[in-house]
Length: 115
Length: 147
Image (tube, rainbow over all chains, first blue to last red; front, top):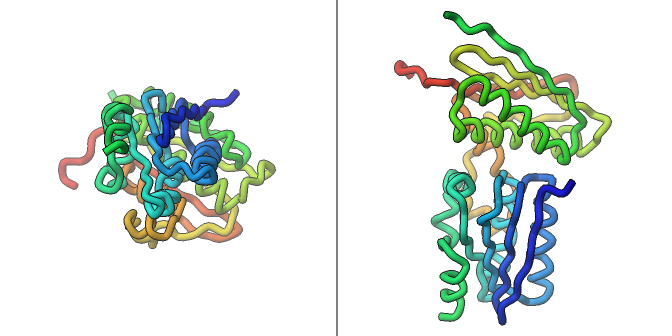
């Protein structure tokens, strides 16, 4: 049984990745592949939406960390939205909120890209 | 009334597929020990991180190699001991991660140990490469007022 899913929605030049389930060392490669595909398609305006993400370990955080420099060099970003308190706490422990833009809703992050 | 010491043991192949099962095992015991939900999740995350290290760095995703997870609980604490027989490295000597630097270097890892140290009250390490490495994670139900 697969306990993690990534669904992708493209809206003009912005891509939204909606994560669901448990993001750990077992499932992180799936998330990494989804980001890699966006990079290969030159789609650098990324929103990662996490309302249905139940769990994240450092392997998941590592995916955010590993690609962001390359994406920002291409004038893109990874913006984080719809985080549950539980998932936010893990990001917060490692100081990610100072380095990534976090929004309550996908629409707010989309608006930021259209500025 | 003095609560009895309880012992649990899980011996499991070193593959990432088993992390979910390991977390569920730890969550159930943490709940039974009396930790609140947030702390149960912190303990499960710390154990996930420690086991991920064993799977990746000590046993190299080899399902034939077993990880040994032992849990001991009593009235005021939960102690988890994870044993591997790989090369191991002394986690107590690792520096805290500099996320900004990691981002610049496009690093994907190096955060797990810091999380473990942040989430648990005590982390002890016994290092004997190829023979037996043990990491011991302890969480207290109430932190001692004297500490």
